[in-house]
Image (cartoon, helix red, strand yellow):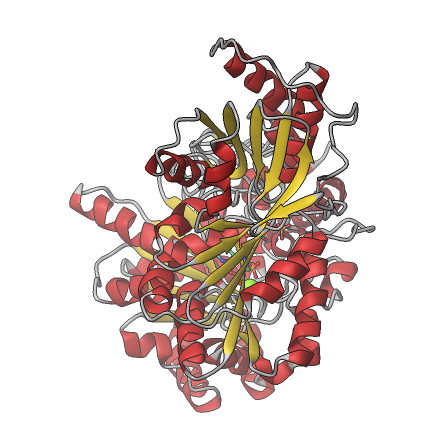
Length: 631
Ligand SMILES: Cc1ncc(C[n+]2csc(CCOP(=O)(O)OP(=O)(O)O)c2C)c(N)n1
Ligand SMILES: CC(=O)[C@@H](O)[C@H](O)COP(=O)(O)O
Ligand SMILES: [Mg+2]
């Protein structure tokens, strides 16, 4: 029987021997590699968290003491140790364990949001609440070096440092990586501390020799602690946290479970805010992950990755970079996932990685534009939420020519509710002057990106889905800037937005089979609403819009408003993602569940038509395929 099978919860860890704990750590690593290589997920980050998590659960008493994980992608070990080992094989599957903390799964889980740099703020609030309620409970926040490059983390540290009586322990899991190497002054500072050979040797000497001298050792260690600290200051001046007024413990070898427990016990005993600086390696214990240059298996990637939307963008931007020396690129610690790595290797001086700092990225882009350049900011759609005010008041208010490229727009699926890119097209409707494009395929990414970078007096946005890019859908006609994809009659005007244009063509075929005449259009630029959409609406019995975005305030709402404002009375039905937090599952399964499929939509449209009886005959479709020959 595996040791892991005897661990029903953290209490079962308390009496294990050092050898048993070492064996348990090895078992956990085997489970991580075996499971995550099958299910997908964050293998690298979790391999680096084995000993830290064991130490956290042995020193603290979860859930009485609250463990708060930043981003939450590194909580697989936490899940294995809190009674979920038996179901761990269902990780990230529909109906299975989430890849992030989940309150519904366990009382040991609290923060479900996977947006980085939030943990210290949660911890600050929790610790203040326990203090006010007179509850003797600790809060432990686990934040990575990447998470620490986010502005929110420093807003929280500023407050925590002033609250000397908060029972709050902050563990900085410093593996030097976000996806790629963590950037910025903080990272350089942490690196210098981590890699100073003289400091490490002296630290080992102090720890090993003193550890061998019971009775004399520990008190002597305390005395020498001052020396060690002094040495640190001499060898690697790192008063940064202490200058803030925060007690600092470390750096500690984050793969030495006993040393981590010592440090955490010391921090716990302190009774006020303490930072424990743990040094780890992403992917530790699994050579392939340790040696993976790109991101240490941050995310386990399929061996054969089909050509994706991201790849098309990456190639197009390099071509633009050669043509337009004023074009520069900005990433928030996601160079590879957003497709900017190719541009970076071609134009290293024109690529800026700002760390996990989307707010800074956006306002810095405004500065770059004011300075005469044309920035292209690559983000995941959901993470733009964090920089909305910067987009609105720093970029748009000043009419800056900045182009945003939002990857992972729409339903992403397996990373759960906070990762779906379902908010951007609603938020962006609010931004005066902003122009928003939703490419339906790879060809349109190139077309629209080149149109976007020509706009130098307003923000432009492209947004496209996660995964394999769709086959090109050629237009049979163009009206204004709107592509006509199908034209068989005037019963229904189907407006397919972005990745939903392909779905709209599928719906048209299903409606055609039921005798309805349909026009399918792709406006390409969905904000501002194209005037030709209003004209076309006036020539059809119904208008249906389909978007891979939340329905609230989405493109459908804007199109319906434009039609109404023009006095056109054609009924409009907008389809999109229901405005709720979606459970994790693969993208196709989620789309099926929310009815955003050709079959589901065709059924709903037919039902809608049935509810509006009219004497107008359904138009005869021109061809069986549903795509007329043009004209
Ligand atoms: C606001 C935000 N931007 C980007 C991301 C994407 N992201 C997920 S994990 C990660 C890197 C986190 O690095 P770190 O905090 O050092 O944790 P590690 O993976 O190294 O353990 C990033 C950039 C995110 N989750 N949230
Ligand atoms: C945790 C996090 O924010 C990302 O690592 C997320 O898992 C996105 O994964 P993809 O890059 O596969 O969309
Ligand atoms: Mg890191």
